[in-house]
Image (cartoon, rainbow over all chains, first blue to last red; front, side, top):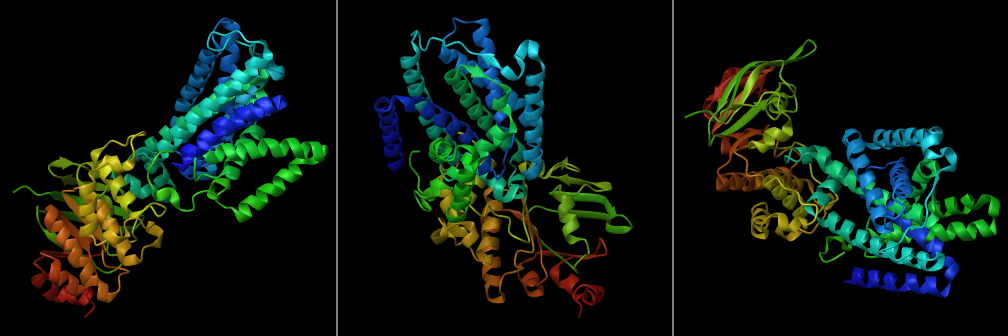
Length: 313
Length: 246
Protein backbone atom coordinates (compact mmCIF):
# COMPACT_ATOMS: atom_id res chain seq x y z
CA UNK A 1 0.00 0.00 0.00
CA UNK A 2 2.79 2.34 0.97
CA UNK A 3 4.49 1.43 -2.29
CA UNK A 4 1.43 2.42 -4.29
CA UNK A 5 1.44 5.81 -2.55
CA UNK A 6 5.13 6.15 -3.25
CA UNK A 7 4.54 5.38 -6.94
CA UNK A 8 1.63 7.80 -7.12
CA UNK A 9 3.75 10.51 -5.49
CA UNK A 10 6.46 9.98 -8.10
CA UNK A 11 3.86 10.05 -10.88
CA UNK A 12 2.69 13.48 -9.67
CA UNK A 13 5.96 14.99 -8.47
CA UNK A 14 8.14 14.26 -11.49
CA UNK A 15 5.88 15.86 -14.15
CA UNK A 16 5.20 18.66 -11.66
CA UNK A 17 8.89 19.43 -11.30
CA UNK A 18 9.35 19.23 -15.06
CA UNK A 19 6.56 21.75 -15.66
CA UNK A 20 7.79 24.12 -12.96
CA UNK A 21 11.42 23.92 -14.09
CA UNK A 22 11.41 23.12 -17.82
CA UNK A 23 15.21 22.87 -17.93
CA UNK A 24 14.98 19.82 -15.67
CA UNK A 25 13.09 17.76 -18.27
CA UNK A 26 16.19 16.21 -19.82
CA UNK A 27 17.98 15.46 -16.53
CA UNK A 28 14.78 13.79 -15.32
CA UNK A 29 14.48 11.70 -18.48
CA UNK A 30 18.12 10.69 -18.19
CA UNK A 31 17.69 9.82 -14.50
CA UNK A 32 14.78 7.55 -15.26
CA UNK A 33 16.72 5.93 -18.12
CA UNK A 34 19.60 5.29 -15.74
CA UNK A 35 17.09 3.96 -13.24
CA UNK A 36 15.71 1.44 -15.73
CA UNK A 37 19.20 0.19 -16.54
CA UNK A 38 20.16 0.03 -12.86
CA UNK A 39 16.97 -1.94 -12.24
CA UNK A 40 18.34 -4.50 -14.68
CA UNK A 41 21.49 -4.71 -12.56
CA UNK A 42 19.40 -5.03 -9.40
CA UNK A 43 17.77 -8.15 -10.88
CA UNK A 44 21.21 -9.72 -11.19
CA UNK A 45 22.19 -8.52 -7.70
CA UNK A 46 19.27 -10.56 -6.36
CA UNK A 47 21.07 -13.65 -7.60
CA UNK A 48 24.31 -12.36 -6.06
CA UNK A 49 25.77 -11.66 -9.51
CA UNK A 50 27.08 -8.47 -10.97
CA UNK A 51 27.71 -7.51 -14.58
CA UNK A 52 30.23 -4.93 -15.71
CA UNK A 53 28.99 -5.13 -19.28
CA UNK A 54 25.29 -4.40 -19.28
CA UNK A 55 25.88 -1.15 -21.11
CA UNK A 56 25.98 -3.36 -24.19
CA UNK A 57 22.26 -4.03 -23.98
CA UNK A 58 21.50 -0.31 -23.81
CA UNK A 59 23.84 0.07 -26.76
CA UNK A 60 22.33 -2.76 -28.84
CA UNK A 61 18.87 -1.35 -28.30
CA UNK A 62 19.97 2.23 -29.01
CA UNK A 63 21.56 1.20 -32.31
CA UNK A 64 18.55 -0.92 -33.22
CA UNK A 65 16.38 2.18 -32.78
CA UNK A 66 18.79 4.21 -34.88
CA UNK A 67 18.84 1.67 -37.72
CA UNK A 68 15.09 1.20 -37.67
CA UNK A 69 14.46 4.93 -37.69
CA UNK A 70 16.86 5.37 -40.62
CA UNK A 71 15.19 2.59 -42.60
CA UNK A 72 11.59 3.45 -41.64
CA UNK A 73 11.55 7.18 -40.80
CA UNK A 74 7.77 7.13 -40.57
CA UNK A 75 7.66 4.52 -37.84
CA UNK A 76 6.16 5.61 -34.53
CA UNK A 77 8.63 6.17 -31.68
CA UNK A 78 6.80 3.71 -29.45
CA UNK A 79 7.32 0.94 -32.01
CA UNK A 80 10.95 1.91 -32.33
CA UNK A 81 11.35 1.53 -28.57
CA UNK A 82 9.64 -1.84 -28.69
CA UNK A 83 11.87 -3.07 -31.52
CA UNK A 84 15.02 -1.78 -29.85
CA UNK A 85 14.13 -3.51 -26.60
CA UNK A 86 13.34 -6.69 -28.49
CA UNK A 87 16.81 -6.62 -30.06
CA UNK A 88 18.30 -6.52 -26.55
CA UNK A 89 16.06 -9.34 -25.42
CA UNK A 90 17.34 -11.55 -28.25
CA UNK A 91 20.93 -10.57 -27.58
CA UNK A 92 20.36 -11.27 -23.87
CA UNK A 93 18.93 -14.70 -24.64
CA UNK A 94 21.95 -15.62 -26.75
CA UNK A 95 24.70 -14.15 -24.60
CA UNK A 96 22.85 -15.23 -21.46
CA UNK A 97 22.85 -18.87 -22.55
CA UNK A 98 26.63 -18.66 -22.43
CA UNK A 99 27.37 -16.48 -19.41
CA UNK A 100 24.93 -18.11 -16.95
CA UNK A 101 27.36 -21.01 -16.73
CA UNK A 102 29.70 -18.73 -14.80
CA UNK A 103 29.46 -17.05 -11.42
CA UNK A 104 30.86 -14.11 -9.54
CA UNK A 105 33.97 -12.46 -10.95
CA UNK A 106 33.93 -14.69 -14.05
CA UNK A 107 30.33 -13.74 -14.75
CA UNK A 108 31.11 -10.05 -14.31
CA UNK A 109 34.25 -10.10 -16.42
CA UNK A 110 32.75 -12.17 -19.26
CA UNK A 111 29.97 -9.64 -19.60
CA UNK A 112 32.56 -6.91 -19.61
CA UNK A 113 34.60 -8.68 -22.30
CA UNK A 114 31.62 -9.23 -24.58
CA UNK A 115 30.51 -5.63 -24.16
CA UNK A 116 33.98 -4.37 -25.09
CA UNK A 117 33.97 -6.50 -28.24
CA UNK A 118 30.70 -4.85 -29.21
CA UNK A 119 32.09 -1.42 -28.35
CA UNK A 120 35.11 -1.99 -30.60
CA UNK A 121 33.07 -3.41 -33.48
CA UNK A 122 30.75 -0.39 -33.37
CA UNK A 123 33.71 1.96 -33.40
CA UNK A 124 35.51 0.26 -36.28
CA UNK A 125 32.74 -0.47 -38.79
CA UNK A 126 32.48 3.16 -39.77
CA UNK A 127 30.50 2.50 -42.93
CA UNK A 128 27.56 1.02 -41.06
CA UNK A 129 27.80 2.44 -37.59
CA UNK A 130 29.27 5.87 -38.15
CA UNK A 131 32.24 4.87 -35.99
CA UNK A 132 32.74 6.82 -32.80
CA UNK A 133 30.50 9.61 -34.10
CA UNK A 134 27.55 7.26 -33.83
CA UNK A 135 24.23 7.47 -35.64
CA UNK A 136 21.72 10.27 -35.48
CA UNK A 137 18.13 9.47 -34.61
CA UNK A 138 15.51 11.81 -36.04
CA UNK A 139 12.66 12.78 -33.78
CA UNK A 140 9.85 10.31 -34.50
CA UNK A 141 6.14 10.77 -33.99
CA UNK A 142 4.93 9.54 -30.60
CA UNK A 143 1.64 7.61 -30.65
CA UNK A 144 0.78 9.29 -33.95
CA UNK A 145 1.56 12.85 -32.83
CA UNK A 146 4.26 14.82 -34.60
CA UNK A 147 5.59 17.04 -31.86
CA UNK A 148 7.98 19.96 -31.79
CA UNK A 149 10.96 19.75 -29.48
CA UNK A 150 9.42 20.97 -26.25
CA UNK A 151 6.20 18.95 -26.22
CA UNK A 152 8.20 15.98 -27.54
CA UNK A 153 10.39 16.08 -24.47
CA UNK A 154 7.37 16.33 -22.20
CA UNK A 155 5.73 13.38 -23.95
CA UNK A 156 8.96 11.40 -23.72
CA UNK A 157 9.23 12.16 -20.00
CA UNK A 158 5.65 10.96 -19.49
CA UNK A 159 6.43 7.82 -21.44
CA UNK A 160 9.65 7.08 -19.55
CA UNK A 161 7.90 7.71 -16.26
CA UNK A 162 5.01 5.40 -17.12
CA UNK A 163 7.39 2.68 -18.28
CA UNK A 164 9.51 3.09 -15.15
CA UNK A 165 6.48 2.65 -12.91
CA UNK A 166 5.37 -0.41 -14.86
CA UNK A 167 8.88 -1.86 -14.74
CA UNK A 168 9.12 -1.26 -10.99
CA UNK A 169 5.80 -2.98 -10.41
CA UNK A 170 6.71 -5.85 -12.74
CA UNK A 171 10.15 -6.45 -11.27
CA UNK A 172 8.86 -6.26 -7.72
CA UNK A 173 6.19 -8.77 -8.64
CA UNK A 174 8.85 -10.98 -10.19
CA UNK A 175 10.95 -10.80 -7.01
CA UNK A 176 7.99 -12.15 -5.05
CA UNK A 177 7.20 -14.88 -7.59
CA UNK A 178 8.44 -18.46 -7.48
CA UNK A 179 11.05 -17.82 -10.16
CA UNK A 180 12.17 -14.62 -8.42
CA UNK A 181 12.56 -16.40 -5.09
CA UNK A 182 14.50 -19.16 -6.82
CA UNK A 183 16.72 -16.44 -8.31
CA UNK A 184 17.42 -15.12 -4.82
CA UNK A 185 18.15 -18.69 -3.73
CA UNK A 186 21.02 -18.84 -6.25
CA UNK A 187 22.74 -16.24 -4.11
CA UNK A 188 22.59 -18.27 -0.90
CA UNK A 189 22.61 -21.91 -1.99
CA UNK A 190 22.69 -23.00 -5.58
CA UNK A 191 23.56 -26.60 -4.68
CA UNK A 192 20.38 -26.92 -2.70
CA UNK A 193 18.37 -25.48 -5.52
CA UNK A 194 19.68 -28.23 -7.82
CA UNK A 195 18.81 -30.77 -5.12
CA UNK A 196 15.24 -29.53 -5.18
CA UNK A 197 15.19 -30.48 -8.84
CA UNK A 198 15.41 -26.87 -10.05
CA UNK A 199 17.58 -25.93 -13.00
CA UNK A 200 19.48 -23.02 -11.47
CA UNK A 201 21.07 -22.01 -14.77
CA UNK A 202 17.68 -21.67 -16.37
CA UNK A 203 16.43 -19.59 -13.45
CA UNK A 204 19.43 -17.29 -13.78
CA UNK A 205 18.99 -17.17 -17.56
CA UNK A 206 15.45 -15.87 -17.17
CA UNK A 207 16.65 -13.22 -14.76
CA UNK A 208 19.46 -12.34 -17.12
CA UNK A 209 17.09 -11.86 -20.05
CA UNK A 210 14.90 -9.65 -17.86
CA UNK A 211 17.91 -7.56 -16.89
CA UNK A 212 19.01 -7.28 -20.54
CA UNK A 213 15.54 -6.15 -21.55
CA UNK A 214 15.48 -3.44 -18.88
CA UNK A 215 18.86 -2.14 -19.98
CA UNK A 216 17.60 -2.35 -23.56
CA UNK A 217 14.50 -0.33 -22.77
CA UNK A 218 16.72 2.22 -21.10
CA UNK A 219 19.00 2.43 -24.15
CA UNK A 220 16.13 2.91 -26.59
CA UNK A 221 14.66 5.74 -24.51
CA UNK A 222 18.09 7.24 -24.01
CA UNK A 223 18.71 7.24 -27.77
CA UNK A 224 15.40 8.90 -28.51
CA UNK A 225 15.90 11.57 -25.86
CA UNK A 226 19.41 12.40 -27.10
CA UNK A 227 18.68 12.02 -30.81
CA UNK A 228 22.00 10.21 -31.10
CA UNK A 229 23.63 6.90 -30.23
CA UNK A 230 27.37 6.40 -29.98
CA UNK A 231 29.45 3.36 -28.99
CA UNK A 232 30.06 5.20 -25.71
CA UNK A 233 26.63 3.92 -24.59
CA UNK A 234 28.15 0.44 -24.43
CA UNK A 235 31.50 1.43 -22.95
CA UNK A 236 32.52 -0.18 -19.67
CA UNK A 237 32.36 3.16 -17.85
CA UNK A 238 28.67 3.29 -18.67
CA UNK A 239 28.16 -0.27 -17.44
CA UNK A 240 30.03 0.75 -14.30
CA UNK A 241 27.65 3.67 -13.79
CA UNK A 242 24.71 1.25 -13.88
CA UNK A 243 26.36 -0.86 -11.19
CA UNK A 244 27.20 2.26 -9.16
CA UNK A 245 23.57 3.37 -9.22
CA UNK A 246 22.28 -0.11 -8.40
CA UNK A 247 24.51 -0.23 -5.32
CA UNK A 248 23.56 3.32 -4.38
CA UNK A 249 19.88 2.37 -4.57
CA UNK A 250 20.25 -1.10 -3.09
CA UNK A 251 18.69 -4.38 -4.08
CA UNK A 252 16.00 -4.39 -1.38
CA UNK A 253 13.28 -2.90 -3.54
CA UNK A 254 12.94 -2.26 -7.26
CA UNK A 255 12.22 1.43 -6.57
CA UNK A 256 15.70 1.78 -5.09
CA UNK A 257 17.22 1.84 -8.58
CA UNK A 258 15.26 4.97 -9.46
CA UNK A 259 15.96 6.72 -6.18
CA UNK A 260 19.63 5.93 -6.73
CA UNK A 261 19.49 7.18 -10.33
CA UNK A 262 17.84 10.48 -9.42
CA UNK A 263 20.38 11.05 -6.67
CA UNK A 264 23.22 10.10 -9.01
CA UNK A 265 22.14 12.34 -11.87
CA UNK A 266 21.53 15.38 -9.69
CA UNK A 267 24.66 14.88 -7.63
CA UNK A 268 26.62 14.68 -10.86
CA UNK A 269 24.98 17.86 -12.10
CA UNK A 270 25.65 19.88 -8.96
CA UNK A 271 29.05 18.37 -8.31
CA UNK A 272 30.08 19.25 -11.86
CA UNK A 273 28.91 22.83 -11.32
CA UNK A 274 30.74 23.03 -8.00
CA UNK A 275 34.08 21.44 -8.86
CA UNK A 276 33.90 21.00 -12.60
CA UNK A 277 37.12 19.06 -13.02
CA UNK A 278 36.68 16.54 -10.26
CA UNK A 279 33.01 15.79 -9.76
CA UNK A 280 33.84 12.09 -9.53
CA UNK A 281 35.57 12.84 -6.24
CA UNK A 282 32.30 13.92 -4.62
CA UNK A 283 30.43 10.99 -6.12
CA UNK A 284 33.03 8.51 -4.90
CA UNK A 285 32.97 9.97 -1.39
CA UNK A 286 29.20 9.67 -1.29
CA UNK A 287 29.31 6.03 -2.42
CA UNK A 288 31.76 5.26 0.38
CA UNK A 289 29.47 6.90 2.91
CA UNK A 290 26.46 4.97 1.57
CA UNK A 291 28.26 1.63 1.66
CA UNK A 292 29.47 2.33 5.16
CA UNK A 293 26.24 3.54 6.72
CA UNK A 294 23.62 1.94 4.47
CA UNK A 295 24.99 -1.39 3.26
CA UNK A 296 21.59 -2.17 1.79
CA UNK A 297 21.58 1.04 -0.21
CA UNK A 298 19.00 3.81 -0.13
CA UNK A 299 16.14 1.32 -0.41
CA UNK A 300 17.34 -0.07 2.92
CA UNK A 301 16.06 3.17 4.45
CA UNK A 302 12.44 2.30 3.79
CA UNK A 303 10.80 -0.74 5.28
CA UNK A 304 13.31 -2.34 7.58
CA UNK A 305 12.85 -6.10 7.29
CA UNK A 306 9.45 -5.56 5.75
CA UNK A 307 10.18 -7.87 2.86
CA UNK A 308 8.40 -10.75 4.56
CA UNK A 309 5.13 -8.95 4.28
CA UNK A 310 2.94 -9.63 1.25
CA UNK A 311 1.02 -7.13 -0.85
CA UNK A 312 1.47 -5.17 -4.04
CA UNK A 313 4.72 -3.67 -5.28
CA UNK B 1 9.20 -57.38 -4.98
CA UNK B 2 11.51 -55.31 -7.13
CA UNK B 3 14.10 -53.26 -5.34
CA UNK B 4 13.65 -49.50 -5.07
CA UNK B 5 17.36 -48.82 -5.26
CA UNK B 6 19.92 -51.22 -6.62
CA UNK B 7 23.59 -50.87 -7.37
CA UNK B 8 25.75 -53.40 -9.15
CA UNK B 9 29.51 -53.52 -9.04
CA UNK B 10 29.75 -49.83 -8.17
CA UNK B 11 33.39 -48.83 -8.33
CA UNK B 12 35.17 -45.51 -7.97
CA UNK B 13 38.75 -44.62 -7.20
CA UNK B 14 40.39 -41.25 -6.59
CA UNK B 15 43.87 -41.97 -7.91
CA UNK B 16 45.04 -44.99 -5.95
CA UNK B 17 42.44 -44.61 -3.24
CA UNK B 18 39.50 -46.92 -3.86
CA UNK B 19 36.44 -45.28 -2.30
CA UNK B 20 33.84 -47.62 -3.75
CA UNK B 21 34.97 -51.18 -4.29
CA UNK B 22 32.44 -53.14 -6.33
CA UNK B 23 29.38 -52.38 -4.25
CA UNK B 24 26.38 -54.63 -4.87
CA UNK B 25 23.48 -53.37 -2.88
CA UNK B 26 19.73 -53.45 -2.95
CA UNK B 27 17.08 -51.63 -0.96
CA UNK B 28 13.39 -52.45 -0.82
CA UNK B 29 10.45 -50.16 -0.42
CA UNK B 30 9.69 -49.26 3.18
CA UNK B 31 13.09 -50.07 4.65
CA UNK B 32 14.91 -47.84 7.14
CA UNK B 33 18.53 -48.50 6.44
CA UNK B 34 21.23 -47.19 8.73
CA UNK B 35 24.63 -46.82 7.14
CA UNK B 36 27.51 -47.00 9.60
CA UNK B 37 31.26 -46.85 9.18
CA UNK B 38 34.37 -44.96 10.19
CA UNK B 39 35.18 -41.61 8.64
CA UNK B 40 36.58 -42.20 5.18
CA UNK B 41 34.97 -45.63 4.81
CA UNK B 42 33.06 -44.48 1.74
CA UNK B 43 29.57 -43.85 3.13
CA UNK B 44 29.17 -40.36 1.77
CA UNK B 45 30.85 -41.37 -1.50
CA UNK B 46 28.22 -44.05 -1.91
CA UNK B 47 25.48 -41.47 -1.32
CA UNK B 48 27.13 -39.03 -3.67
CA UNK B 49 27.22 -41.62 -6.43
CA UNK B 50 23.58 -42.60 -5.90
CA UNK B 51 22.42 -38.97 -5.91
CA UNK B 52 24.44 -38.07 -8.98
CA UNK B 53 27.09 -35.80 -7.48
CA UNK B 54 29.86 -38.26 -8.39
CA UNK B 55 29.97 -40.49 -11.43
CA UNK B 56 31.10 -44.07 -10.79
CA UNK B 57 34.13 -45.41 -12.64
CA UNK B 58 32.30 -48.65 -13.19
CA UNK B 59 28.93 -50.17 -12.34
CA UNK B 60 25.33 -49.05 -12.43
CA UNK B 61 22.71 -47.50 -10.17
CA UNK B 62 19.09 -48.45 -10.76
CA UNK B 63 16.30 -46.52 -9.11
CA UNK B 64 12.61 -47.47 -9.28
CA UNK B 65 13.27 -49.70 -12.21
CA UNK B 66 15.34 -47.39 -14.40
CA UNK B 67 19.05 -46.86 -14.83
CA UNK B 68 20.11 -43.53 -13.33
CA UNK B 69 23.88 -43.96 -13.52
CA UNK B 70 25.58 -40.68 -14.38
CA UNK B 71 22.43 -38.53 -14.37
CA UNK B 72 22.71 -35.08 -12.79
CA UNK B 73 21.46 -34.58 -9.21
CA UNK B 74 18.60 -32.49 -10.54
CA UNK B 75 17.31 -35.24 -12.81
CA UNK B 76 17.65 -37.86 -10.10
CA UNK B 77 15.70 -35.66 -7.68
CA UNK B 78 12.95 -35.31 -10.26
CA UNK B 79 12.70 -39.11 -10.35
CA UNK B 80 11.96 -39.22 -6.64
CA UNK B 81 15.24 -39.57 -4.78
CA UNK B 82 15.82 -36.70 -2.38
CA UNK B 83 18.60 -36.12 0.11
CA UNK B 84 19.30 -34.04 3.13
CA UNK B 85 22.74 -32.86 4.11
CA UNK B 86 25.17 -33.32 6.95
CA UNK B 87 25.56 -29.56 7.01
CA UNK B 88 22.04 -28.23 6.45
CA UNK B 89 21.72 -26.63 3.03
CA UNK B 90 19.18 -23.85 3.36
CA UNK B 91 18.40 -20.58 1.66
CA UNK B 92 19.73 -18.52 4.52
CA UNK B 93 18.26 -15.17 3.51
CA UNK B 94 14.79 -16.58 3.03
CA UNK B 95 12.28 -17.48 5.69
CA UNK B 96 11.48 -20.98 6.88
CA UNK B 97 8.15 -20.83 5.13
CA UNK B 98 9.66 -19.58 1.89
CA UNK B 99 12.15 -22.44 1.86
CA UNK B 100 9.33 -24.96 2.12
CA UNK B 101 7.29 -23.10 -0.48
CA UNK B 102 10.20 -23.11 -2.89
CA UNK B 103 10.55 -26.82 -2.38
CA UNK B 104 6.85 -27.40 -3.02
CA UNK B 105 7.01 -25.17 -6.10
CA UNK B 106 10.01 -27.11 -7.36
CA UNK B 107 8.11 -30.37 -6.98
CA UNK B 108 5.27 -29.01 -9.09
CA UNK B 109 7.93 -28.27 -11.68
CA UNK B 110 6.75 -24.83 -12.59
CA UNK B 111 8.26 -21.70 -11.21
CA UNK B 112 6.08 -18.85 -12.38
CA UNK B 113 7.74 -15.49 -12.96
CA UNK B 114 4.52 -13.67 -12.19
CA UNK B 115 2.38 -15.34 -9.56
CA UNK B 116 3.66 -15.07 -5.97
CA UNK B 117 5.63 -17.95 -4.49
CA UNK B 118 2.95 -18.63 -1.88
CA UNK B 119 0.52 -19.54 -4.68
CA UNK B 120 2.82 -22.26 -6.02
CA UNK B 121 1.68 -24.66 -3.29
CA UNK B 122 -1.27 -25.23 -1.03
CA UNK B 123 -0.94 -23.27 2.19
CA UNK B 124 -2.23 -26.30 4.07
CA UNK B 125 0.55 -28.60 2.98
CA UNK B 126 3.14 -26.02 4.04
CA UNK B 127 1.38 -25.71 7.41
CA UNK B 128 1.40 -29.48 7.74
CA UNK B 129 5.14 -29.68 7.15
CA UNK B 130 5.70 -26.81 9.59
CA UNK B 131 3.74 -28.74 12.21
CA UNK B 132 5.48 -31.98 11.41
CA UNK B 133 8.93 -30.42 11.82
CA UNK B 134 7.83 -28.31 14.78
CA UNK B 135 8.78 -25.08 13.02
CA UNK B 136 5.32 -23.52 12.92
CA UNK B 137 6.11 -20.70 15.34
CA UNK B 138 9.31 -19.87 13.48
CA UNK B 139 7.88 -19.88 9.98
CA UNK B 140 8.58 -16.19 9.34
CA UNK B 141 12.08 -16.36 10.76
CA UNK B 142 14.99 -16.13 8.37
CA UNK B 143 16.88 -19.40 8.21
CA UNK B 144 20.08 -17.69 9.23
CA UNK B 145 18.56 -17.13 12.68
CA UNK B 146 17.72 -20.79 13.32
CA UNK B 147 19.73 -22.97 15.71
CA UNK B 148 21.40 -26.07 14.28
CA UNK B 149 18.72 -28.57 15.36
CA UNK B 150 15.98 -26.61 13.63
CA UNK B 151 18.15 -26.13 10.56
CA UNK B 152 18.47 -29.90 10.33
CA UNK B 153 14.73 -30.32 10.60
CA UNK B 154 14.07 -27.70 7.96
CA UNK B 155 16.65 -29.29 5.68
CA UNK B 156 14.81 -32.60 5.94
CA UNK B 157 11.46 -30.85 5.67
CA UNK B 158 12.51 -29.30 2.37
CA UNK B 159 13.43 -32.74 1.06
CA UNK B 160 10.15 -34.21 2.30
CA UNK B 161 8.19 -31.47 0.53
CA UNK B 162 9.42 -33.05 -2.69
CA UNK B 163 7.40 -36.15 -1.75
CA UNK B 164 10.28 -38.47 -2.60
CA UNK B 165 10.11 -42.24 -2.90
CA UNK B 166 13.48 -42.48 -1.22
CA UNK B 167 15.09 -40.03 1.16
CA UNK B 168 18.77 -40.22 1.97
CA UNK B 169 19.70 -38.48 5.22
CA UNK B 170 23.39 -37.76 5.68
CA UNK B 171 24.02 -37.74 9.44
CA UNK B 172 20.69 -36.28 10.51
CA UNK B 173 21.78 -35.98 14.15
CA UNK B 174 25.32 -34.68 13.77
CA UNK B 175 25.70 -31.26 15.31
CA UNK B 176 22.53 -31.80 17.33
CA UNK B 177 22.96 -31.92 21.10
CA UNK B 178 22.54 -35.31 22.80
CA UNK B 179 19.33 -34.23 24.53
CA UNK B 180 17.83 -33.09 21.24
CA UNK B 181 18.88 -36.13 19.20
CA UNK B 182 15.96 -38.39 20.02
CA UNK B 183 13.52 -35.55 19.58
CA UNK B 184 14.88 -34.78 16.12
CA UNK B 185 14.94 -38.45 15.07
CA UNK B 186 11.46 -39.02 16.46
CA UNK B 187 10.10 -36.13 14.42
CA UNK B 188 11.90 -37.33 11.30
CA UNK B 189 10.70 -40.90 11.59
CA UNK B 190 7.14 -39.79 12.15
CA UNK B 191 7.34 -37.67 9.03
CA UNK B 192 8.79 -40.55 7.01
CA UNK B 193 6.06 -42.90 8.22
CA UNK B 194 3.36 -40.43 7.44
CA UNK B 195 4.50 -39.99 3.85
CA UNK B 196 5.47 -43.62 3.45
CA UNK B 197 9.02 -42.74 2.43
CA UNK B 198 11.81 -45.29 2.27
CA UNK B 199 14.93 -43.97 3.95
CA UNK B 200 18.67 -44.42 4.20
CA UNK B 201 20.44 -42.59 6.99
CA UNK B 202 24.10 -42.31 7.75
CA UNK B 203 24.52 -42.41 11.51
CA UNK B 204 27.30 -42.72 14.06
CA UNK B 205 25.19 -43.11 17.18
CA UNK B 206 24.62 -46.81 17.89
CA UNK B 207 21.62 -46.13 20.13
CA UNK B 208 19.90 -44.20 17.37
CA UNK B 209 20.66 -47.00 14.91
CA UNK B 210 19.26 -49.65 17.26
CA UNK B 211 16.13 -47.68 17.88
CA UNK B 212 15.18 -46.52 14.40
CA UNK B 213 16.75 -48.76 11.76
CA UNK B 214 15.16 -51.88 10.31
CA UNK B 215 18.43 -52.81 8.63
CA UNK B 216 22.08 -51.84 9.01
CA UNK B 217 24.87 -51.79 6.44
CA UNK B 218 28.43 -51.34 7.69
CA UNK B 219 31.06 -49.83 5.43
CA UNK B 220 34.76 -50.65 5.61
CA UNK B 221 37.26 -49.38 3.01
CA UNK B 222 34.77 -48.63 0.28
CA UNK B 223 32.84 -51.87 0.56
CA UNK B 224 29.92 -53.25 2.57
CA UNK B 225 31.43 -55.45 5.27
CA UNK B 226 28.16 -56.50 6.86
CA UNK B 227 24.53 -56.04 5.94
CA UNK B 228 21.52 -57.29 7.87
CA UNK B 229 19.30 -56.73 10.87
CA UNK B 230 20.59 -54.24 13.47
CA UNK B 231 20.98 -57.03 16.04
CA UNK B 232 23.13 -59.18 13.78
CA UNK B 233 25.34 -56.46 12.33
CA UNK B 234 26.01 -54.72 15.63
CA UNK B 235 26.87 -58.06 17.26
CA UNK B 236 29.30 -59.00 14.48
CA UNK B 237 32.84 -59.11 16.02
CA UNK B 238 34.46 -57.60 12.90
CA UNK B 239 32.05 -54.68 12.96
CA UNK B 240 32.50 -54.20 16.69
CA UNK B 241 36.25 -54.06 16.26
CA UNK B 242 36.58 -52.12 13.01
CA UNK B 243 33.52 -49.87 12.95
CA UNK B 244 32.30 -49.39 16.49
CA UNK B 245 35.81 -49.43 17.97
CA UNK B 246 34.80 -51.49 20.98
